[in-house]
Length: 549
Image 1 (cartoon, helix red, strand yellow):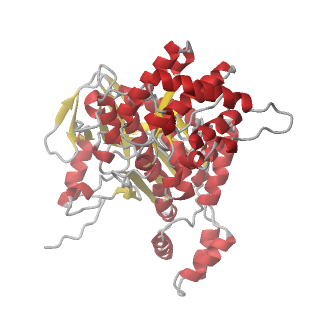
Image 2 (cartoon, one colour):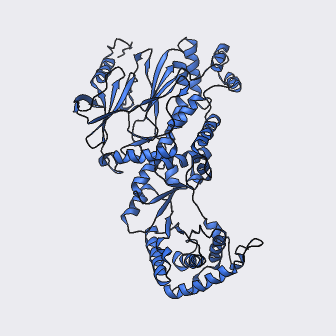
Image 3 (cartoon, one colour):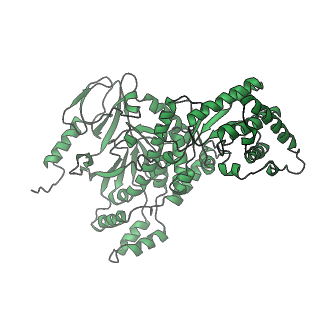
């Protein structure tokens, strides 16, 4: 039984305290914090923003994930005595001892976090988090916050793409734990791929912690461990001898060979023994892998014989798994045999047996699968899902945009790496059909845009202005942490999962298509555009700039 959501929250908070202490950061965060402290600037009010520069996988959108973990991290932020003593040993000997006392007393009571809600569809260059507070503290948070959202958002977005490629009806099973980047990566992948659109996981711990449905039956090793019917599982004391099932299955197998014109000599006895043994153990969950030797010559026949015997004894077999070869072609042949058995032997449940396909499935192979005739009901995906082979990192960054109320901007030889200065509000403008039309970045003191009123804005990276009239306007970010407390209720993973599908459904098809999507527009208000121009000219009244030739 999965843990209820309240228990799951408690477990996640314990996990955050254990896995993501304040020490899980880069050394230079402490050296910068010390330099701020040493110059008396550590309590200056500062604002950082977290965003990514390009949508992942060549797509048109991403899903923002990991916010809940960030909130739990902030609520538990604090250094232990052991932490401080270690830092004393690695920082330069000249470090003022009073700085370590400062660290002992540090917490996030002065930090305010405004963020896009968990599981929201987001786009490149939009500030997803605004972290405001004392300069030294919000600097120390950088690496940990990036660590918590980067992979969670990436793998959730990857799962959503697999769901789009698979279509709404096909079931998706995540089975990437053995391929994941360590135990933490495996759990994170299972959780956020479920939120992103996968139906089930093979990860038992993820099922226990997060309430994700778990699924799985047998591996090829189980099948190949048997060699003869003599090895079929013996019943426990007091249970009925399984010889009836074995005899029944052998009789049915003979009739199947006649019906299908199969050669009995090619049927692998060890495979039949494995299937029988498993069927005796789990008569209501019989779904074996049937390609250990030969699907057509052995595996399919052995499955049908055992499944028909189970049916005769009042049980309901589940189906089969295919794990090699041409999955589409094999699934069509397997379904043909199922239907033939259903009709010839009058077993209606054979019409509804499921076929699971697993064989190094990628997004591309999922799309190709949909273009071919196939009978696959469930697709299992591992490596290409959890390792995000097409793009191993989302590339979120955390940049300073304001200190002491003055805007700050990073310049770069690469225009894409320049930052947008100032404390901001972020609005999503929707069209008449409810599709996101444009995300607008404004300075925080500006009045919000109004539905039905035309506004002028500047798409990022362009000098030409754009006039737009939204049908609806929503404020994209909300305050979620203040004065040491989480200020919004945490949605359950099930609620986040539902939200993902609604959000993606509301996207314009040109933005959510998997190949060659149309870029989504992120724009600056007129006032913010002018501020950037002033700073670039070095004439901003709030800043000081050193001009060099």
